[in-house]
Length: 558
Image (cartoon, rainbow, N blue to C red):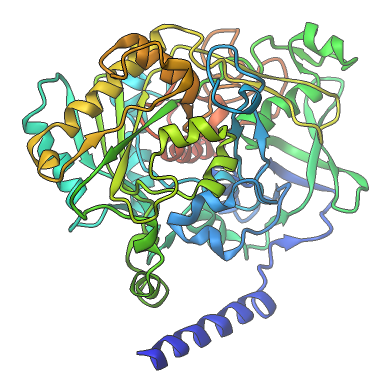
């Protein structure tokens, strides 16, 4: 056995050395050309797709500019996604102090991780796959209905190697069996779906960019920050201004289009710094107005998540102790199997606009997760009672309102692209989100009370939070739920919507994702979503990028 392990490690080391020193992608360059047909800003989930699709046309030149570099091997291990946060591959954004939520976080501030490097947030997310439900797309503009996107959903499902949680999972089985007992309407319970291949993370970096990055017509410029979009007097986007790793500044021209794939935070920030946004806001920073678009940076939404800890008597969950055993570690590093090869999301459920994800691990590492989330110590310990016990059996129900009504914004703090913008999600500003979250929490509780979970000794934990001690500790009590939500609910990392697409003149981009008021500038990333997806949005963003590429290349009927 150990000879096999050593041989496998040797093969891995030799393979890594070969790829690092003898097989460097031809597309990755240090010095760009003066101009390209298409300049793509951001090599995240959408940018990798767009760069791959456009460079399929051999007589077209494409430049992909990325602020970060390569992700390390840890990012390839699905269960280790949190360990990428607050490192040099994370933009490490933080919200403004929240007025209606986040009371259990230092200074009422939540951390918002965003991937920085080739693959973007697709290299640090939890890989959960979802397209939401057909009703999510009813108000989307022409060309973006659920029916319009169905062919792209199929394409994404095939290319992204969508998998389900392991067959032998006890908790997933109990969750699926619960549907028979639940007295709720429109309930859908299913196994967790995620994107992985041979035990490793499978993002658009793997599925798209790596397939393209030896093409002669594609150049990839890393560790380079785009500081401004340049315009001619006729409002044509002419190219970009960049800051190289050594601090020097350069300009790169685009003869056809500049395409922003920088994400929900960086895209609106770059637009504003380039003179596209509210004239009133631009005037505060003495930025000349190129196009007065008041909605740039508005319409920010996210799924605010409340974790419910569920104690178990049966030994059917994943614990820190089990993860650290030699057989579990060897199972992954030798065979690519076991819990390290999954994202830990065993099952997901919906009941109308109530969402629940079953995360099969209840024990947490306080030192790591508390700092990553910015929780204060006491609220953290109240929410996660197994914080100091790596052998405690239990799991988490991650509950959230699938269609939140609260809307926040991204705006400028400075006229320097290197300074973080002002991010205000305005969590729970709309009281309907409290009511919707209350229903989601009780949906989870009802699920935990079904026969199979009772057989495992499942018992939902009601946290003893100082701010809520004047209320009965029972999630069925709306006031208690509201109190816990406003203290301890945290981001799902699903921030979207800051450059809304639409047919109306107030939208930031039109039905073809072209920025209004200027020419030859397009946005393709999570910022264009008009409204929330009833699930994790990553796969939807991939589908949008696939269709947008077809629009650019005139492969669609509209």
